[in-house]
Image (cartoon, rainbow over all chains, first blue to last red):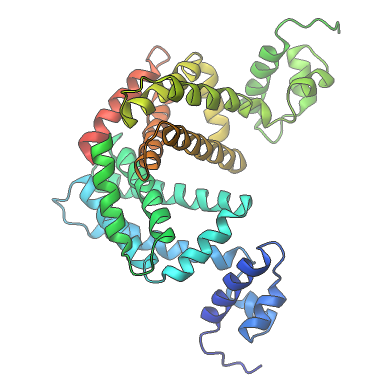
Amino acid sequence: MGRWEPDAVGRLRAAAVDLYVEKGFDQATVTDIAERAGVTPRTFFRYFADKREVLFSGSVDLQKAVVTALEEAPETATPYEAVWAALEAASTMIGQNHDWSRMRNEIIMANAELQERELIKLAALAAAMAEGLRVRGVKEPDASLTAEVGIAVFRVAFGRWVAGPANRKLTRTMRQCFDRARALI
Amino acid sequence: MGRWEPDAVGRLRAAAVDLYVEKGFDQATVTDIAERAGVTPRTFFRYFADKREVLFSGSVDLQKAVVTALEEAPETATPYEAVWAALEAASTMIGQNHDWSRMRNEIIMANAELQERELIKLAALAAAMAEGLRVRGVKEPDASLTAEVGIAVFRVAFGRWVAGPANRKLTRTMRQCFDRARALI
């Protein structure tokens, strides 16, 4: 195995979700994943701390994108408009690869421990959004309410988008879900 | 220690939260708790599987109350009105003991593992509410949206109520938070 491994991360990610779906998350080993990606287990560990990390390593970038979008939203934006901008940034990142999202979601839904981790990541995202709104001068409970309700709607939208056809836009599903939520409450 | 132990559960609960606050959740032992409650460790294990259960044993009754309220809401109730009835039932249960809720919340917020468990219980509650709405004939995404947004607002309301004075009503805080959420999104 040469030291130069073009897109080893991408191949490891793809190999991992394939194997988690085929064998189940618990059964798939790092050796399996590395072999399918055509790299050594050592290469796997250069990029990911463990098997779980393959599924969650994107969450740091996601949180950064959300916080940046909140910072960059126009001063005149309402709390909702700022949260929309943040979730739109998140959707643009996530929405790029429907296939990966669908498989990742399937793997997580089949494993209680992974579901817990996903819940924690989403709670952290909501907390980061609430903090971003407070930095913008939004008072409580408005900051927490907009952030928490935003993440709740985002979760439902994501679930629908991931179960639907690949050519549908996540931002569009999200917009529809916000419109429905507004009508419902 | 006689076999007849009036309100051993109540005393164990009170002793446990006292000790979790005093010593920290990880440091307090079942022996400590039993001793303070004036019972044997064996009595503790008759009521609770472990130390964590003391904090979460109420969640079964809570979920039951929520599901029953959804079933019993008038046929003409909108999804929101049904969810409101369910959360009102939950608030009535939780709202009875501000002191216990405040201490329980403090203990959970100080411990990552307990926070995870709380998130899982709330996610399960939202899922149960969405299912209860579907049973009532509410279609998707409306069922999930009303349930998830309802739990999001409930979480924020609970956080405010628990941090506020003991004589404030949880249902009132919840009503105010729903009014704000409606105005915000």
